[in-house]
Image 1 (cartoon, rainbow, N blue to C red):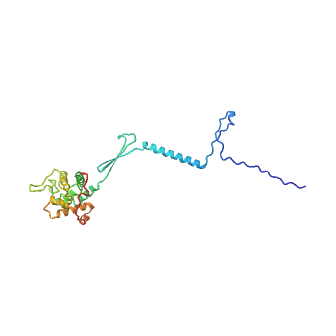
Image 2: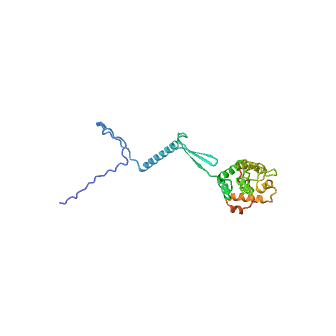
Image 3: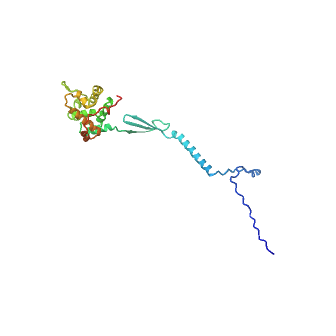
Length: 257
């Protein structure tokens, strides 16, 4: 008797559902148990979009709220000084944080170096350098003009009578020499006269100024003034000697004056 081969039966495996049903099961409701919810399983791309959207919303919220949290920074510029005041949001000056930053004027440094290089009696150098620059600005002059004339006329006040405070040779005539109460007063008077009687009349180079300021000069006055102007231009004695051109005094003058 031939034995029949055993037959093997395989049970088909059901494929899992791609997405589980998202309905609530009610099998427990009959016995009073709370129903359970099953949410659909999201694909990877949807999850990524959800995370990116959440980050975007958070970023927008931070940007919108930041101005009310971070204290504002106020900058006020006054001359060469920048006042920086950091105020607490919603606070007052009494509760704010204050600090100041000084901004240096390079022109003051150049004039200060010029006075110090030749051991001028105008001390402290930083004070008189600042006075000379401020006076020039007040009348719209080249900041180098007054120191250059002072160097030519009195070797930066070394040879001038200190009691009359006149280092510019200004107002010298047969009747005498003008005297001033202070160097500041003499700088102011000379700057005003140079502006009104020379620069505004079209005399804008040392050679042109010389024809009226010291008409008897053979040209040496203008050459000397040009040398000192060039020295301050480069802040170098050597370069002042090398550059002997006739300086245009309108380059550093204030056109709005």
